[in-house]
Image 1 (cartoon, rainbow over the protein chains, first blue to last red):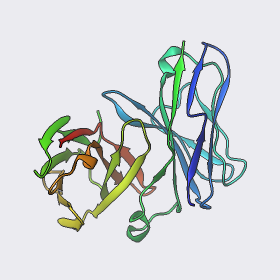
Image 2 (image 1 turned 30 degrees about the vertical axis):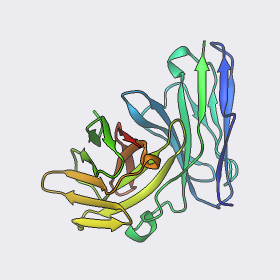
Image 3 (image 1 turned 180 degrees about the horizontal axis):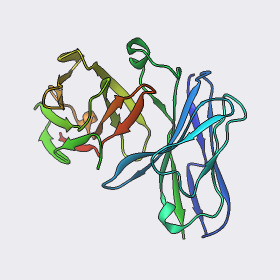
Length: 119
Length: 111
């Protein structure tokens, strides 16, 4: 079954304690992205990756790091989490990096989300 | 501000009625997509409409796009309780296909 798997599903941590949220996909998709979702603000892109070893900042990258050492994995790293990073996080993938109209008919595939609370 | 802004932010209707949600955006786009999100879960892609299209149908979904007004609408006909969810528009623009999501419309369908 084609899927995007995020772990953990829920996480409560303390300020300053480094954490990693994992994202893995089994669809051989080139493009992967991280979003955070906050009430009243919708989804905002944190980082994205066009392919292995190619990553770039989204709209709200401060306080986050990513890596793309393998095509299937795109972990999100919070080196020193703060309470304002409490949010619902989603990993999303797409099969192409240069998308024509036909390819976009597929849309993004999202993971189930990680609810992070930083106290 | 958000590229895509949905209106209304919340909508409550009776089962069987039609639900209409609107999305406005500010810059030119390549295409516009609608997604659905059940509470706290990942978004699911529903339908895409290209910038040169005006209307598209998929099952009980009908999407329109007016590029002159920079707006789109999503119509769900004959709504069901299972349609209860949040609906997001996402605009795609730029050579590298930047995707921006709106804030969403929370739809409640009352049985």
